[in-house]
Length: 161
Image 1 (cartoon, rainbow, N blue to C red):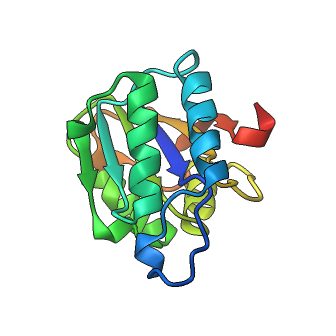
Image 2: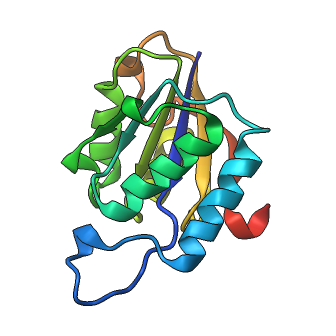
């Protein structure tokens, strides 16, 4: 059984003099990611491997969640493939993930909402900033994951906890 956590980055700053890739977390985003991390440490098994978009807002969301869950930041793998990825690109990242039982991926909408729905046949309208969906797969290897094979275990977001 494999467990996947799909995290949408927390609320970012809308500083317009920065490229989209470099926008940091905003004040609300920093507050929300701490709130989510504290909540999640009582709810989930910490991930063994974390793969993140290298965009500042996604990477810093991953760092803060790692800190709250007691996961060393050295397990974070950055891949440009997750920057504004579509669901098919997210699936490819999952299928190529290092061997582990619990995997967390940090990135962006709309791909993360559509990816969650396609992977698990969930019907989530929108994963808000700072939100996370948990999906389990009855497979032995990440390479065996396909759309429609997962089961949605949970869906949490800052305003809903």
